[in-house]
Length: 299
Image 1 (spheres, rainbow, N blue to C red):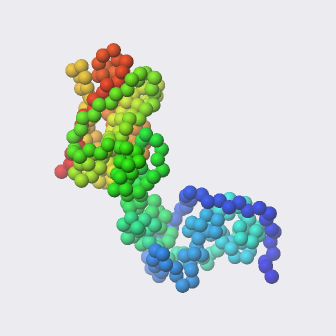
Image 2 (spheres, rainbow, N blue to C red):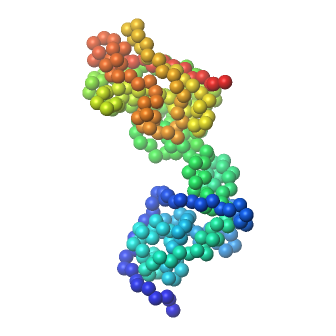
Image 3 (tube, one colour):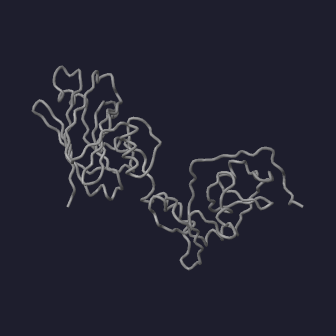
């Protein structure tokens, strides 16, 4: 006979994109069981740790209904405390046995196919994956929001084939940015340019945006790789006209930082629109700005 409990009428099944948990670290003196990717332990422990609603791995507190069906804490709220399997009211029962079993496990990183060989204790796995250097990069294209992600060779091909981005070999550049009726444009993004330099890839950005109430232009460089690698390089940007010149020297930001984050931090060559039009010459009704620069590797 099934345990007593009030039945629920409706169950909401939800599949969130990501879940956030506070994770604990397994004690060093605990015995562990390692589960290889694509394999199940003999007692299907890995399968038991999957939430039946969101299908992601469960972390404490793991809840169970009177019939023993388990559920993660996020989904317990989403299904309004109603078991999605038997429709009994969940109550506040913790599945301490399953939490203890999870503590004894070590699992490979989800980014193993991208090169990560890390094996983490179950409760440390999420934290590792959130900061794993092998996790995919987001597409650095700034012209529109692009949901594509992958490793660097994949993204370089994606930028060229799908966004028609220009790829150049060399560590120096000289680009001209033109815009008619610049006074009518408060926010604009010019085509991204990618440079192959020192065997690595760098993205040159040029954008118009509002800095408070003032219209400005900004140019900056992002590095296609990790932040610690980006810090090994420096770059110089120059813009000028009418006998004047403005120079910026900085360190490229990793594409782990979005172009919007870099832009909003003003980590680049910032140029007020009036000065940009002065550099452009003529009647100041058209933007004709030349940005030159170079990239070098620090010793």
